[in-house]
Length: 200
Image 1 (tube, rainbow, N blue to C red):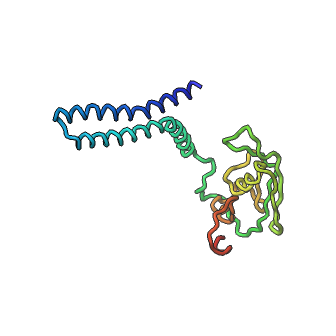
Image 2: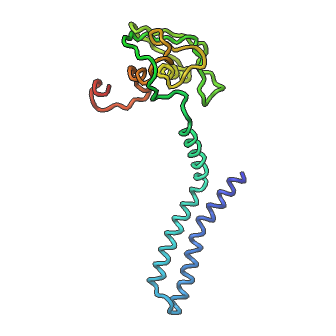
Image 3: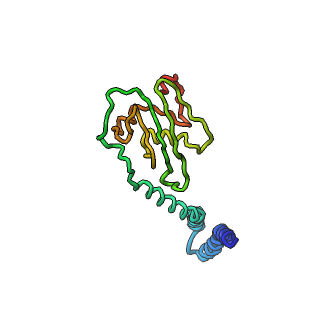
């Protein structure tokens, strides 16, 4: 409640200051004009300058509460950008399969996101996806559908268990090659006004 009172007081001061300055400018300006020290045109120019200056200051003061929040948000973003991934996306090492069938298997996978270590996303998750068929993961939001794709593309590594491609642990595969053989359509794709082939 005290914070709201301070915000209201600050807004009142910011809005009333300009009118007090108008009063002071015309009062002092009229005295200068009557004494012959300044003409009306100069007084009016000064009035316009002060008015625009106060508008700018008032708008800037209104942004002060948001500035502190923006600063904290920027610090969090910078800290996030400075994090080093445990998975090097530019690593040239690893196996490149000369012949690939495309059979995928998740074997007893446990996973939690690093930013949410207390929330278990997958627990003892096992799944076989044969290249000869079509597999669909269906479930409510937050059930781990997108997480399985992220693990398959090695954006993350499971805390426990393995993800296999044709019997090979994907950790042993060349990461650039692994990602290059996959096509991914996001949940909210941006579609161009072209054919399906052109969009793909």
